[in-house]
Length: 326
Image 1 (cartoon, rainbow, N blue to C red):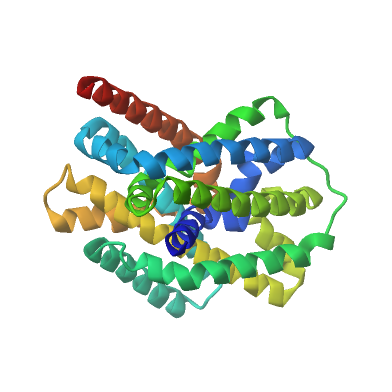
Image 2: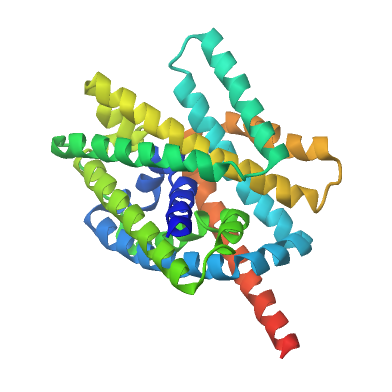
C-alpha cells in the first residue's frame, strides 16, 4: 500500500498547484457557475477517476507515443510551458510581499532548484512529497475550516450552460501535461492498487474542491482577486500566513514536476542539453511575466482544449497499435 500512498501524494501534488490552492482555478472552472458548481465538481471527479486510471495503466505507452510523435510532443510541451509559467507567476506574486533583496534571492534559489530537478530527474520528488503533501493537506484543510463562517452580501453567478464543458476542460488541464509523471508511477502499481490510488486521489481532491467552492461561493467578491482564498484570509494575519505557505508549497510541488516533463519532451526535439534546460525552466519563467491571473483566466481553457486533443490522439494511436499487433 506504500506505492498507493505515494501515488496519491504525487497526484495531489501535481493537481494542487497555484491555481487550485489560491482558488483562482476553482473560480474559473466551477465557482462562477453558482450553486450548479457542486454538481459540476462531482461530474469532474468521475471524469478524473476514469482519466487517471487510464493514464496510470497505459501511461508508459502513451508517454512513448507522445515522445515519438513530434506534433503531440510539441503540443504537450506548450501546455506544460503555460502551466509551468503559472506556477512561476504564482510564486512571484507571493514573493512580492517580501523585501526586494529577499525576493531576488528566493527567486534565484527557486530557479536553481528547478534546474537541479531537470538535470537529476524526479526520483527525489517522492521523498519530498512524503513531507510536503501532508503539510499542504493539513494546512489547506485548517484554512478552509477557519474560513467556513466567513460570508459577504455580494452576489455573482454566471450562466451554468457551459458548466459541463468546463468539467471536461478541468480534467484535461490537470492530467494531459502530467502523463510522464503518472506513467512513471503507474509502472509500480498493479490493477487493484491503481484503482485504490485513483479512488483515494479523487476523493481527497473532491473534498477540497467542494469545501473551497463552498467558501468561495460565500465570498463571491473574492472572484475578482488574483488569489481568491488568500483574499478571504485578509482579515486574519495568521490564517493569511498559513494560506500563503499552502499556496507556495502547491506551486513548488507542481513546478518541479512540470520542469521535468518539459525537459523530457524537449529532449526528443532538441539535443542540446543547456537549451533544453533553458526551455524547461527559464522560458516559462520569462513567460510568467504575463501575470498569474491572466494566464489562468485566458490560457488555461485554451490549454485544456489542447489537453483533450493530446489525450484523444494518444488513445487513437494506442488503438491503432493494438490493431497492428492483433
